[in-house]
Image (cartoon, rainbow, N blue to C red):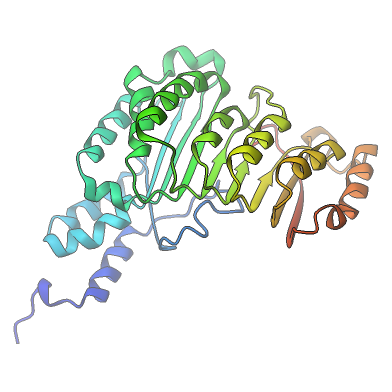
Length: 308
């Protein structure tokens, strides 16, 4: 009996496409995975311009017919990751501009995106050679606002790259409104401006970068308390103190999950200090301070020279 590609059951076709998309996991991800509760498939993949092998194969497979393309697209574009560094092999901002223009012209592709990450670690010494283009500053907010099913937004930039995005997001809000579908937000403290654009987030993660500008904990906690009444989970690397807990109580007393990551400097690994004793004493009273919190985790780690 003759058998053709069109005779494949849909679940078998989906299995073939998924197997084609398999690639090594990102070991740099946070222990609290960005899309753990997004509702998207756990087999979703990252579109990374540095990793061409798997997505080129999947793109070729998607050209077989419309049914196969329908199966491949979510695997290709469920999770988009734009990363820009000072390394010469890093994709240029212009290449990301071109990709966004392509996606903006295809509503079906935009509907498949559930997770979007913009991450750029560029030192001040190299910023002149690696600054985003004017088009990048304008197109990224437009692109994010054009993702109707976006669930998780990761927005992590060095402080000197932030002002350009602050102004373009403000202009976009006037015409497109806030990002209402975003429920999980992960930022560097310098990007706290974007909290006000995501009023419905339920999970928030703060990730401080090495040599990043200092932003007071109160600054972004106040933004969360003012703009995000649905917030239920908070993850932070801020040093544990009574002031920190007071800010959480003042601005987000309704939290249900609190993740604290305590880091010791690399030169003091294994050496206890008075601060360690004080922080541990504070943690003993945390359940009484936060009766609404049902899950509290505290991870103590010895950080390397770079804090990520």
